[in-house]
Length: 141
Image (cartoon, rainbow, N blue to C red):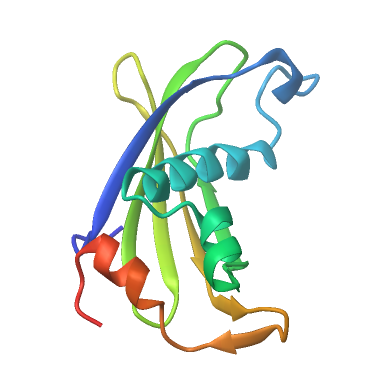
């Protein structure tokens, strides 16, 4: 993780029964759902709903890379906090994530996603983040 954080947002969640496997731990694929909840909340908190942004400007933001480091497993009914931190928003959007137990602040998971800007309907990659997003994040373009 890095100290060059542009924006941070945290969401509190609780592991539902349908997210655990027979070993009673969260199946690894669900961690990206938790990341998405935090990332979506982050962009909503600055007034940029990425789905609405597509409707207004015709841009999509597909994830092109994602990674997860599992430190401690989450289990059924665990209450936890997922924090999203925007690290970069010049050529792509880079977001780091951290999942910690709500009780005791024990670190469970770290992750990262990278998103590019795709102009639709041509599906052409743009190599700069739109001005509206940079303005909302408070960064110069």
